[in-house]
Image 1 (tube, rainbow, N blue to C red):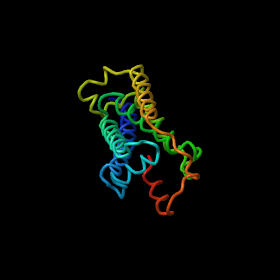
Image 2: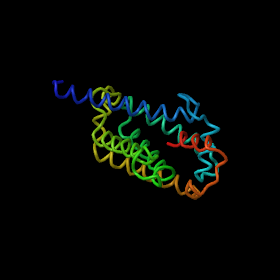
Image 3: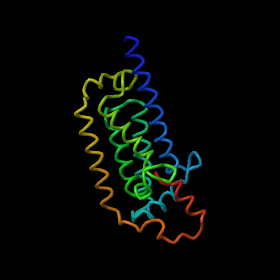
Image 4: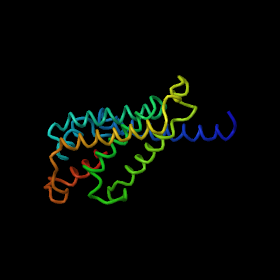
Length: 191
């Protein structure tokens, strides 16, 4: 391995560990209440408010997808599967929580979701690099950019299927909320 390849693989490793660790931790916040997260009951209530009748079930599913995609991305395991799951979760989060708030994160918009989605695109189509589980097992030779694009398309179709189960809710400013604390907690729970 020459110096240029090593530098590229180290950059990919750093990106995978950061993105994978961050999204896995985000899922753990909802699933277990880790890292000062809301935990399953509050996350379930938030998902119900978003229009998912079985809020706790959908919150658990989203949490599991976040933790699994994060682990797969961090490890560089199983090709584009982790990035495709991440894209699916981000698409649902944008449509249910962030899109109405505009682009920028300071207003609760989808800026951060876009960054996650673009990184998922890059990892799915370019692979995890030589410092990965896939490279260790020789699986990296089985995946190429076409597989990445197909997996990402599958992730988006999964998001569309999840969104089809949702009863759209009125915009947040039209909903009555009993206290400012409840609003702040709901904002923390969102993906």
